[in-house]
Amino acid sequence: MATFIVSAFWHGFYPSYYIMFFFAAILSEVNKDIYKAGVLFHKYIPASIRPFVANFAALFQMNYLGVVFTATTWSNTVFFLKATYAVPWILLLLAIFYSRGTNLVGRAKKLEAKLASL
Image (cartoon, rainbow, N blue to C red; front, top):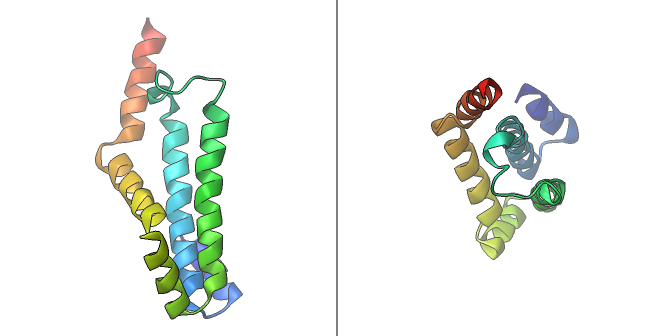
């Protein structure tokens, strides 16, 4: 998180920079959790399309954050949030709360250990 805050400070003092880098840090954490818990998703997403789904989700979020980055002013950022109903941010927050609240990575490690012992 400190790296993202320093990056926001480095770019300038527009409020959208700090918002964007904050959500980029959350996106990074969600991506790490989902990657570590990949064994939980293997039965739902076929291996042939898994990379495409992961890349689409990450690129969608980063493009959304990129628009927020270029908004610069608070009023532009709020306008964009209202226009999109803040759906990507809400999904991102729900994903981090679900991941950390249900110990997604811990459950994946238990499943991997169980599968390895078979």
